[in-house]
Length: 318
Ligand code: AKB
Image (cartoon, rainbow, N blue to C red):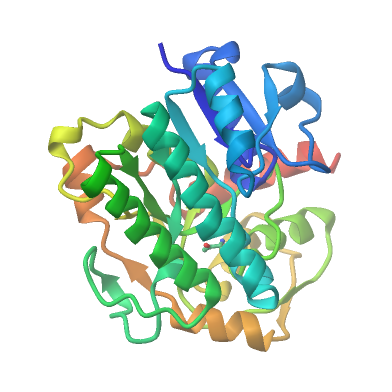
């Protein structure tokens, strides 16, 4: 039986991943780890156990792992790219020092560890079209620098201590449940909220800027699938390119407009976001994920748009 700790359970991915894991493995088997000031609420709180699990506090993590006999940790604690750029030291403390704490606890208590990386782990010198699995990673943001470090540190703990570490490079994740906080790809979530509220959307990313994106159900499925994968088949571990769809602002706008013809958008480019976006891949080659553990996305832009609009109309009473 699996006993799982989700660190960062109240965040954008954590809030949905915790519920998905509870569906699959049983409510009492999945502990929602949170930090002070960000306690679980509603169904997340009521459906299963939760515990204080601040990634910067190794003793607190060790205590939860001991108390609940944890064997698998999903470590989702991180600042997103734009926020990280405004507070590099904190981004490092959470992303890298925090991972070190998790890996040490995992080594001692024989836990598997999933720590997501991102398209942000690539930089301007990376080939941008069909970015290969193994390629140049010289990011120009602290977010990217910390993501590359977490990939390397996770591989190091696997090679040196045999800790079962695995990871994917998430594209921008789109969801109607918990909004993201401070990422470069957030526009692709915000645009749906504006459309459903009947408001004009001001796009911070320039026309023609391509980035990989994924719908949350596919991102959750991929993460769990990788942690379930037969280790004998894994040539790579930290971290797999994960692709699903790649689009520029005008393409997602058109996809929404097809279903909501009144919807309007104009551009007011945010220089920091644009600078970061241009350093990331246009689209990644995820053939290693497909070959090594059978990755296959379910949603394309059209299917995601239909579902997002439907779910947001209910959520926003529109
Ligand atoms: C961000 O934009 O910072 C994240 C990411 C792609 O890692 N969504």
